[in-house]
Image (spheres, rainbow, N blue to C red):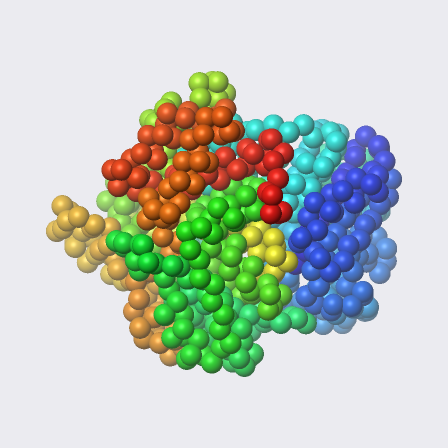
Amino acid sequence: MCGLAGVFNLNQKPVTTQLLKQMGKAIAHRGPDGNGTFLSDNIGFVHQRLAILDTSDKGAQPMSSKDDRYVLVFNGCIYNFLELRQELRAKGHTFHSNTDTEVIVEGISAFGIGYLERLNGMFAIACWDKLESKLYLSRDRFGIKPLYYWFNGKTLVFASEIKAILKHPDYQLGVDSGAINEYFTFQNLFTYRTLFKGVTMLPPANTVAMDMNSQVVKHRSWWDYNFTEPDESMSFDDAKLETERLMEQAVARQMIADVPVGSYLSGGMDSGTITAIASKYVPRISTFTCGFDMSEVTGVEANYDERRDAELMANAFKTEHFEQVMNAGDLRWSLPKLVYHLEDLRVGMSYPNYYISRLASKFVKVCLQGTGGDELFGGYPWRYYRIFDSLSQQNFFDQYYEFWQRLVPDEQKSELFQPAVLSQMDLSQPRTVFERVFTFNDKLEYDRPEAHIQNSLYFEAKTFLSGLFLVGDKLAMASGLEERFPFMDNDLVNFAQKIPVKYKLGNLSQEIQRIDENASMKGRYRSFDDGKKILREAMKDYIPSKIIERRKQGFSAPDESWYRGENANYVRELLLNKKDTISAEFIQPQYIEKIVKEHTEKHINHRLLIWSLMNFEWWCRIFLKGESDPNGF
């Protein structure tokens, strides 16, 4: 886990050491244990190291292959590197360190850049081929590790975080109006653009090759999710046993480290499963929970504090347990820091993530995360019902798009955006990019409920899960912490995609009948109360039955209540101050006033939109105006 950046000038202009140092300094929080550079005329790399495997200087980057053909910088962790190293040794390769980095660069030397497709882990990689004068950029199959780039036709600048790209003197800061449109539709971006004009994220499971001699740029997409070919001959018991085996294997693989490893522990099944298995390998493993002051919280949010269930599991697994208790006032202190580190605004109220990773970093350097279990095993059943009765592809798109407009529906965009911003937008763009996620995959079908579920799993893995990984990476690395995701083990993902829908969500025909019979019932989306049936069965001997039977609940602060209570003044101060609100250049103040008033006075829950408006305001202050946090980032 580290940070990387680099510059490649196709016009032969030399790269300077000073520029590389400035770029490295911008992402130094990602790698506080060391830094290094590679510079050769018109190409240069900089690397900030967080030492996890072989913490000696032998693991320093950039790293060259033994034949001196390839130079590589790498961010991430490869969990099958020991098996790959053994294979390379059999072919005559020798190793100087005990790092996964050396295995990658020697593997490329032996097999070519396609070797990256054999890696089981998370990675963002830049590799320079001295012999052929080619630069390769690549990301892991799930997109866990970020990699951004900006290319103006003659200069390519890339980095783990956008703030390093902003250091290049040729980049002119601008705002991508299309990205703003996407964000305020989905609270996410389904394309790979960013709010920074011209800065793009490399898609997951993609490798880009840039040839200095021919100046040809080639993209290769080498993997994609596939939920469309389930093994219907698989028995439930076989599926359960194999899920259990692969879950054990995944956690064991991701325990590899030469530094302390801990685990997040919420009140849910996913983190509980991971902690239960990890505790077998590390007695008294450190676990971390974030709870909330619920003294002024009412309604459904009163159940958001998961500390009691986490304590139940911590006692069962005999962990060394730590808790962070948040109150409403923590938002004001953390929000500018969070936006500075996140920079590429994405899903959800994520300041609890910032605090819990900050807590964990005081005790461990690696922390296991439960993200991915819901997307693989069907953990959002209340979302899937919405497209059960789809009769065609177009009907499916209509119903699902209506749901995924999480913030502002298209018909309200003229109220939301300033006229000058609207004139730069294509208001049909969000619908177009939404549909493109599906139409990119020609294996998807739209003729039966099981297919609709498979399509939903594919969509959420490609979009929502991708956003969660981005938030997780940026906010953990803000504290120099490596997060790992055992559910995203290659073998476990491959198998989970083949498990029939009926083992994840039960008998769909019965559930559809229940929905039809109760069509007028308020809250009918709760017809499916317990997704992930196969995972619950596989893990029932690992974690307490109370947790197994617990209804799915997201990790979120009780902001609906807090925005009406203690944080109401902060919301108004940040968003309704006509003199100081920078985002008013893009967002109409009248619309913000309407939303805040509806939330506070009419009890219409606009917590997602208010959160996103506050994030965007701080984004404008930090990146457009250059405002600093008085407490430091």
